[in-house]
Amino acid sequence: MDGVLAPALSPNESLMTLHELHRCYDCFDEFQADLPSLIQLGSLLDECITITQALGILEPLTGEHVPPETMMMQGQNWRESLIGNGLLSRNRAVLWLLERLYGSLETLRHKDVYLAEALSGFALWLRRQLGPNRLLCSEYLEDAQSAFSDISHQDLSKLTLASSSLDLVLCNDLFEHLPLLDRAFVEIARVLRPRGRLVATCPMAFGRQISIVKAVADPATGETQMFGDAELHGDPVRPEWGSLVYRIPGWEILDQLKEAGMAQAKIHHISSWKYGVLGADLPGILVIEAQK
Image 1: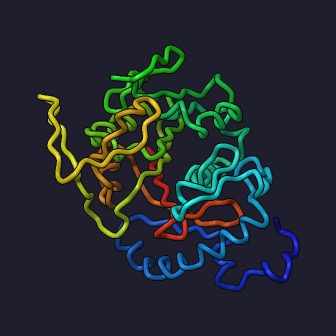
Image 2 (image 1 turned 90 degrees about the horizontal axis):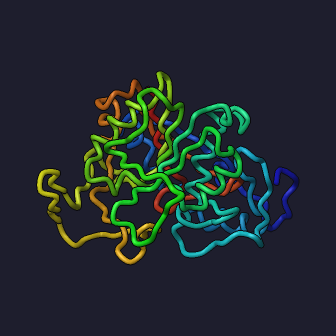
């Protein structure tokens, strides 16, 4: 991957920017100042894919070379594609950040980790790499359409986990589906140890501070008020119904995390054709990090 490229694949200076690009933001204003340049870099995504199709990628944390012929590359939303070893582009963005935060898989194996999913390629990858001793994977199993007796049920808005029992909580594209997101943030802060971290992705209304609200649930009655047509995403637990989208979070999510008890919160933009971390509207993936 780092050797001399064939002349037809030799990237220009602009394309080399996306070899491995990382920027970190504490608020919307900081990101907004960078947004025009990021959108411009997004025009290079097709060229990035050409390189990926020829060379494959390096997997973060393991350093494994994933050959291009073993990868699935389809559509134009690369955030949800570029599948290699069961991992999506956005999954590798999370791994890229974990490598920067913790250094190695060996370090992570000595942490108590909670992943709020159990039926995904990412969950399978994490179990394989970390083992079962200090890793908990769960699904929200209420109204499940199949029996999942070997999977833990957890509701992020009322976790059954002990306070200050975890070093790391991982949530992948889950926040948009939570009717009581503020409660979930309080629960995540509760179960984390001091200096413990939340690392998460979700579809974001990245061009605005305030979230786009699509539905609101009344906790007293259980009724849901819709604002426009229902938006449903795929759900392995309820494949026939799907999972309702309640909101597309805006940058206010950082303030909400701090109000819930996190000492700091930031959003990373990560883009790298070397590591197979590419986006759609943006050249890379937005990853939320909050520390207690």
